[in-house]
Length: 183
Image 1 (tube, helix red, strand yellow):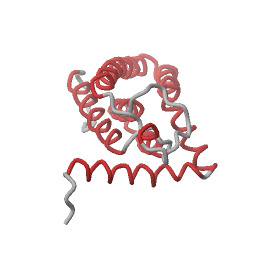
Image 2 (image 1 turned 90 degrees about the vertical axis):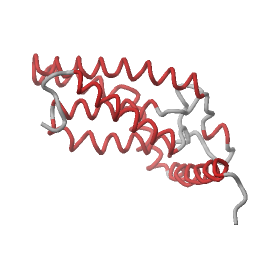
Image 3 (image 1 turned 180 degrees about the vertical axis):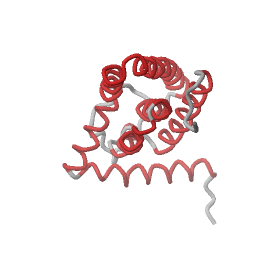
């Protein structure tokens, strides 16, 4: 029978998952893919999407982009507050076997800001333009996976960010009349 407290067993298990995922970064093709996706998830992808929506759909695209921007501002404030409050060290800082395959944007890991934003933006964008789901869902999943593979986040950071991003998008969609994922 394992005598370690549940919390320590969960942390050890999560570190194991993190190490296994991080080994994918040892392959240069895999590392290049996840680094590129992560870089796009820094904001580049979302800014380009907002510009394309405005150019392609005029006022409706502007309305959707404004909705995305407002959601993003709130997500950023929430993410920064949570990082300051939790101050969880990044996996590569806690376990020498884990490599940071790219430089982190800040010191702490909880929650994954990339994942939080990707989930919130994708859900809001798909509420306005459901046809975008075929590109947004795989991109968001890749962004989330990249954070663990690159050694920057624990799986629980990504899972929590997914829940927070989903909740934030849900509230955002509830507040904006006439926009819904389920219409």
